[in-house]
Image (tube, rainbow, N blue to C red):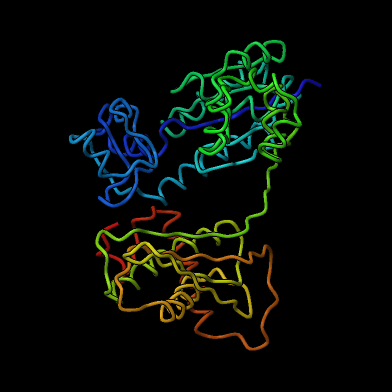
Length: 385
């Protein structure tokens, strides 16, 4: 059986969702990231023409595109659309590995009898996603994951590229080394110093040379230069933690305001855990001070939880240990020590905890039916998110 791996990558996902939800934004430079001290999360293709890209400081993006439309982003809305897309992918194969909110690998090996040739399946899938979400995606199909990811980036946006095994080595010999997924700044600097411009340049030296220079990364790089990648599409990778963090619009010592943000983050983390059927025992917070020094604290509960109030109260207890005279720039909440499945029942359940769990369940149902913004906790209504 010929191995066929598909990589589905949504086009400018966050910005595109905003343009779909608000048609007045179509054709305009939309940038997700409104805080002047934050970074760009996503940029529409209209904004990218000005040199704007993800992880760019917002203040720099404003200089490049002063007439751009800067939005704070709606994480829950993006998660809703992501879940809708993943359901569509799971209808064509049980082997779907979601690697981020807007991209996934799908093993379509042996599905020709059901879905037709890979090219036909790719076109049908793009049409289904567009019809359901009004969003476009780019798809790459290749003999392995690493080549499929390269392929999906070749004709963005709204593209479909298929790399056949017999054309693999020709492609790699002409491919700029910067297109190899996972090459970081340090590795890129070393490769540039050694005169490496394409994967073919890597093969001019033995594998032992690259292992001496880069360790395991060198060995992996050598295999990829040959087009080799045996990694499987793994549908259910274990989740180790769940977290959320925000940079404040202004440095602050206002304990009440900081706790508002902690509640907002605890609510997001708890909701994500509940959606995935998970609970966690360890609550942690992260604080970045005005001088950019970072401090963290954590506590482990007797039992696992995905309750908003429990996570929030734990975060507040930890904040007391970290709060000091210096102003705070960023705060974050995380839950780790993740557990899946039913937990052991307590002989003496806490009535307050049970009420909080029932409240969470009711809020989840309302938001699922009517949308995230239909119900908001009074504590966080006035936050500048």
